[in-house]
Image 1 (cartoon, rainbow, N blue to C red):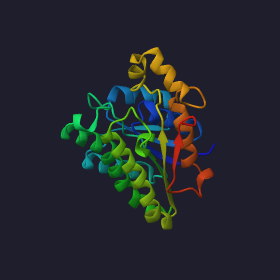
Image 2 (cartoon, rainbow, N blue to C red):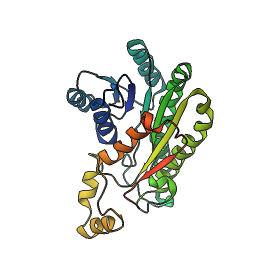
Image 3 (cartoon, rainbow, N blue to C red):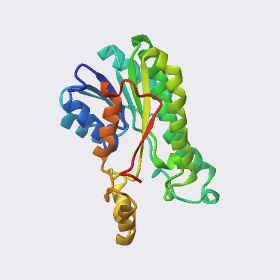
Image 4 (cartoon, one colour):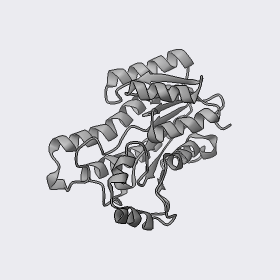
Amino acid sequence: MRFTGKIALITAAANGIGRATAEIMAREGATLICVDNHPERLDTALKALGPNAHGQLCDALDQAQVDAVVGSAMKQLGRIDILVNAVGGSTIIARPSANVEEHSLDDWQRIINFNLNGTFLFTHAVVPVMKRQRSGKIVNLASIAGRGRSVASGSAYAAAKGGIIAFTKKLSYELGPFGITINAIAPSLTLTERITPHWNQRSPESQAAQIESTPLRRVAQASDQANVICFLASSDADFVTGLTIDVTGGQ
């Protein structure tokens, strides 16, 4: 029970990697603050996660809403031990894998904002809490696209996720003296609820090529990513900070 007595705030907690992370932490004793912007999905998740899961509707790109969520959590629970920044993705634009000359400025800004601003805003709001506590763990979601290793991802997404990797490394120096660790994972293609429809539209040959390129010969599930997040958020990783772990099946 790695998370007994811990308060964990997880963004994008209603589905995907955020939901899978919440499920593991709930099973292992955490009290959860589950943040999402979709009321029906969030309600469904909370019912499944049990009585120690508290829901907060929030637009992670709105600073006032983010600050209100953190303030409410502190008033209700008194501390925040873990922050998982799971908001992000590329499918918010019509052609996320387009070449750079095919991206509009609006496409670029939407991808950058969606993947960087939410992570910044929740970190910005939670860090003062963790500094006062002299402890805390932050885990961010990057991507192998941020390492320039995803031919299916566009330049905007690669830039945004590269930013998450750099942000994580920089903050490890800022936060380490306060007993706060900050790490990230860099997933490969992961079959979440949002990605699975796109996967199913690919030809059998394309799917087979993706699987063949992965040494473990399968595509990741959300739980594969969540398992590594939970390691980084646990006391097992007390001497790990500034690191981005590739969770790719060996790609």
